[in-house]
Image (cartoon, rainbow, N blue to C red; front, side, top):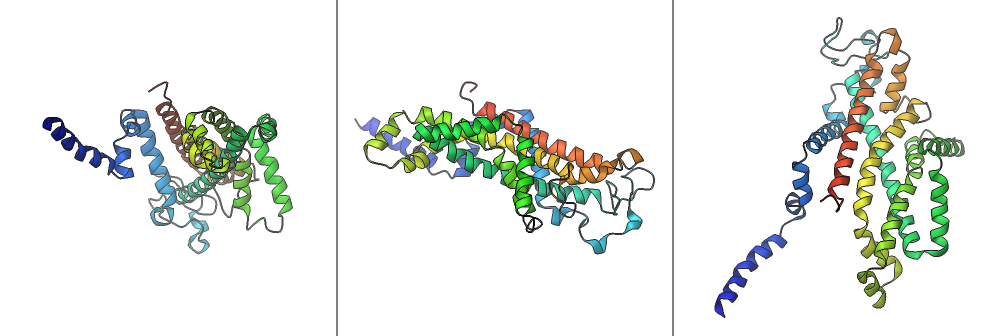
Length: 322
């Protein structure tokens, strides 16, 4: 009788030590981190995405110049080619534009704006879509029919078209405040065009979860519907939401760049990568190709790395592939 007692007491510290691990330690000990380390594509994409995000967010400290400080700009430095072409300068490794702005610094600052707009628009779409999906899936009836028909109608139109229409309507309604709210307008336009994807995914998962025993038990003991939705069902449907959000981050960045390239997004005074591409487009066939090529490459690299991470995350969180 004493031997099993000793074995139990010996196993207890190991179990308590495992439960005492912090969230960071548990993440590095999880299957998700193991799958990430075993995927070379995910590791490379993660490293590239980290460099892009870190370079963009730390642009005020890492950029060699401030491209928006008019006092530091000189027209004598305009149209300088990138290193190592003839006439280039090491102070401007990727060349300069028509205003003498350093292209490397402009890309870093523009990437920061693109990331902020993309992240905020995805966050807005997640809040609206997850809330609508929970209400539709758990409540059913009229709310389900109304919300899903709205989503179905919106999904029949391309997201870029919805964003264009919303941006135009809101900009016209807030004409006097347009300059002060231009980033808020573009975030709202992109976010409202992407919420149906989250709503339909969460609704489908909620329909499955609401019939399980833990939800029925919560109803029996008198827990309210909103509390069941947001404290019991929501944690169990966040896996697909995380995957869609990662992929939609890349889509949102491309959508913002498209709107800015078309001239209805962010203005030249607050340029994103799309604005930089638009500014250099008129010089593409006059020999100053670097003004539009380098911002375009930065956009492609950033979006591709985020997309690859989203694809890996989708496979890693799919129980049928694990």
